[in-house]
Image (tube, rainbow, N blue to C red; front, side):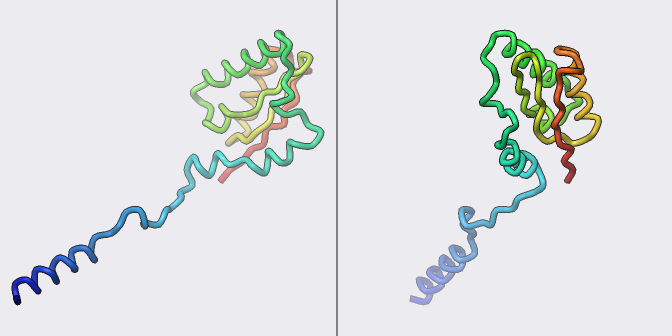
Length: 131
Protein backbone atom coordinates (compact mmCIF):
# COMPACT_ATOMS: atom_id res chain seq x y z
CA UNK A 1 0.00 0.00 0.00
CA UNK A 2 2.83 2.38 0.90
CA UNK A 3 4.60 1.49 -2.34
CA UNK A 4 1.48 2.23 -4.40
CA UNK A 5 0.98 5.55 -2.58
CA UNK A 6 4.62 6.55 -3.17
CA UNK A 7 4.37 5.61 -6.85
CA UNK A 8 1.17 7.62 -7.19
CA UNK A 9 2.75 10.60 -5.40
CA UNK A 10 5.86 10.40 -7.62
CA UNK A 11 3.70 10.28 -10.73
CA UNK A 12 1.69 13.29 -9.54
CA UNK A 13 4.86 15.28 -8.87
CA UNK A 14 6.24 14.35 -12.26
CA UNK A 15 3.07 15.47 -14.05
CA UNK A 16 2.90 18.69 -12.01
CA UNK A 17 6.52 19.47 -12.84
CA UNK A 18 6.06 19.00 -16.58
CA UNK A 19 5.24 22.18 -18.42
CA UNK A 20 2.61 22.21 -21.13
CA UNK A 21 4.30 23.97 -24.05
CA UNK A 22 0.98 25.16 -25.41
CA UNK A 23 0.49 27.37 -22.36
CA UNK A 24 3.95 28.92 -22.59
CA UNK A 25 3.88 32.70 -22.89
CA UNK A 26 4.70 34.04 -26.32
CA UNK A 27 7.46 36.59 -26.46
CA UNK A 28 7.94 38.96 -29.33
CA UNK A 29 11.30 40.36 -30.18
CA UNK A 30 12.07 43.34 -32.32
CA UNK A 31 12.51 41.07 -35.29
CA UNK A 32 10.86 40.79 -38.67
CA UNK A 33 7.36 40.58 -37.18
CA UNK A 34 7.58 44.08 -35.73
CA UNK A 35 9.33 45.52 -38.77
CA UNK A 36 6.79 44.16 -41.21
CA UNK A 37 3.88 45.99 -39.58
CA UNK A 38 3.36 49.12 -41.62
CA UNK A 39 -0.37 49.40 -40.95
CA UNK A 40 -0.15 53.09 -40.05
CA UNK A 41 1.56 53.85 -43.34
CA UNK A 42 -1.07 51.88 -45.24
CA UNK A 43 -3.85 53.87 -43.57
CA UNK A 44 -2.11 57.11 -44.52
CA UNK A 45 -1.77 55.96 -48.11
CA UNK A 46 -5.50 55.33 -48.53
CA UNK A 47 -6.29 59.00 -49.14
CA UNK A 48 -5.89 60.56 -52.59
CA UNK A 49 -2.44 59.02 -52.99
CA UNK A 50 -2.10 56.23 -55.54
CA UNK A 51 -2.03 52.73 -54.08
CA UNK A 52 -0.76 49.47 -55.58
CA UNK A 53 -4.32 48.52 -56.54
CA UNK A 54 -4.36 51.58 -58.78
CA UNK A 55 -1.31 50.38 -60.71
CA UNK A 56 -1.96 50.83 -64.40
CA UNK A 57 -2.40 47.65 -66.40
CA UNK A 58 -0.89 49.23 -69.50
CA UNK A 59 1.92 47.00 -70.75
CA UNK A 60 4.47 49.81 -70.59
CA UNK A 61 3.60 50.63 -66.96
CA UNK A 62 3.66 46.97 -65.93
CA UNK A 63 7.04 46.56 -67.63
CA UNK A 64 8.43 49.66 -65.88
CA UNK A 65 7.24 48.46 -62.47
CA UNK A 66 8.71 45.01 -63.14
CA UNK A 67 12.10 46.47 -64.15
CA UNK A 68 12.25 48.59 -60.99
CA UNK A 69 11.13 45.70 -58.78
CA UNK A 70 13.77 43.39 -60.29
CA UNK A 71 16.55 45.88 -59.65
CA UNK A 72 15.39 46.41 -56.05
CA UNK A 73 15.14 42.69 -55.29
CA UNK A 74 18.52 41.99 -56.89
CA UNK A 75 20.28 44.47 -54.59
CA UNK A 76 21.63 42.42 -51.67
CA UNK A 77 22.54 45.57 -49.72
CA UNK A 78 18.88 46.46 -49.20
CA UNK A 79 16.89 45.33 -46.15
CA UNK A 80 13.78 43.17 -46.39
CA UNK A 81 11.66 46.28 -45.73
CA UNK A 82 13.31 48.11 -48.60
CA UNK A 83 12.76 45.18 -50.93
CA UNK A 84 9.05 45.28 -50.12
CA UNK A 85 8.34 48.94 -50.89
CA UNK A 86 5.36 49.78 -53.05
CA UNK A 87 6.20 50.62 -56.66
CA UNK A 88 3.19 52.19 -58.37
CA UNK A 89 3.46 53.13 -62.03
CA UNK A 90 0.89 55.09 -64.01
CA UNK A 91 1.43 56.81 -67.35
CA UNK A 92 5.19 56.43 -67.03
CA UNK A 93 5.31 58.09 -63.60
CA UNK A 94 6.47 56.10 -60.57
CA UNK A 95 5.43 56.55 -56.94
CA UNK A 96 7.54 54.84 -54.28
CA UNK A 97 5.98 54.20 -50.85
CA UNK A 98 6.84 52.22 -47.77
CA UNK A 99 9.33 51.97 -44.92
CA UNK A 100 13.09 51.75 -45.42
CA UNK A 101 15.83 51.57 -42.79
CA UNK A 102 18.06 54.46 -43.88
CA UNK A 103 18.50 57.48 -46.11
CA UNK A 104 20.91 55.39 -48.18
CA UNK A 105 18.18 52.82 -48.91
CA UNK A 106 15.70 55.58 -49.75
CA UNK A 107 18.17 57.12 -52.18
CA UNK A 108 19.21 53.78 -53.70
CA UNK A 109 15.61 52.82 -54.48
CA UNK A 110 14.85 56.24 -55.97
CA UNK A 111 17.99 55.96 -58.11
CA UNK A 112 16.87 52.55 -59.39
CA UNK A 113 13.48 53.97 -60.38
CA UNK A 114 15.08 57.05 -61.97
CA UNK A 115 17.37 54.82 -64.03
CA UNK A 116 14.27 53.31 -65.63
CA UNK A 117 11.96 56.34 -66.08
CA UNK A 118 14.16 59.38 -65.44
CA UNK A 119 14.42 61.48 -62.27
CA UNK A 120 11.56 63.81 -63.23
CA UNK A 121 9.11 60.89 -63.24
CA UNK A 122 9.76 59.54 -59.73
CA UNK A 123 7.83 60.57 -56.62
CA UNK A 124 9.84 59.33 -53.65
CA UNK A 125 7.46 58.96 -50.69
CA UNK A 126 9.59 56.37 -48.88
CA UNK A 127 9.73 56.72 -45.09
CA UNK A 128 12.89 56.14 -43.07
CA UNK A 129 11.87 54.03 -40.09
CA UNK A 130 14.40 53.20 -37.39
CA UNK A 131 13.79 51.14 -34.30
